[in-house]
Length: 298
Picture 1: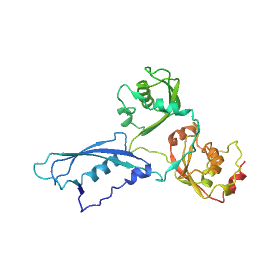
Picture 2: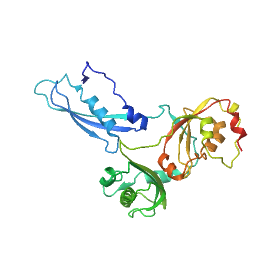
Picture 3: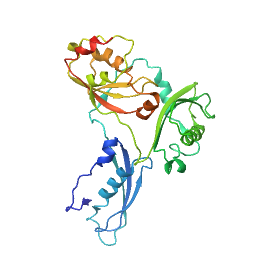
Picture 4: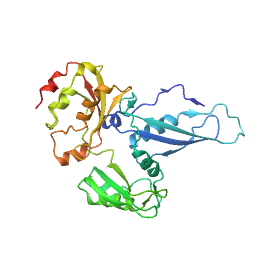
């Protein structure tokens, strides 16, 4: 298989999708009929940004199968393309011994929707209406293998149509391998349109983060000289609805743990309504060696 040599052989990450931090995996099925024609293309990834799917379609449409000869049978291939808008460095978490969550995670791995749905339906009236986006954070709790879970809202956008779609989806969930209950799982889901107006948290320094955060009760007293600074951490922002998920890049340094725990409690100076719009945002925090300013915080 080859790519038309007259064109760029690198797939391009759409700039708009990169700015919005839209990512995911696009799967394509290709059928080649002869050596010179472009393949028949089927693209999967219904919830992904259309720009990502268009980029993949344009790229694979230039594939050719020059080794095919007249009379050969059709050749079918499947290929996946992953778009990652975040820092590509691996993130690590602290190992947990005797983790009580392990059995829960094993049981949750068998969660299915009896209606065959993989995600909540994006209602047409919302897709063509004035609401561009709705983010919802909720918890489902299973008490029996053959019964729907209870649903508890943690945070929800102000859109009753989208909320009802999630309720219908959750009512079809089952946990057939449930042996010990109750078992709960928190789920973060966003309805997004390519043209939606969204709010994003950009990468920032520790000082920049502190300047836009509310004071927290736990005193900030850290010895940065023991932390192998400078270093970066990745934050998934969840406050004020849950603890922020903060992880180190590439390797764990135990002396950073107090700072990591402190960052998990950081809350930005924004309203709860604005917080719903940024919940789940992922960004990098740069921690310098001269971060003594943080120890002067009240």
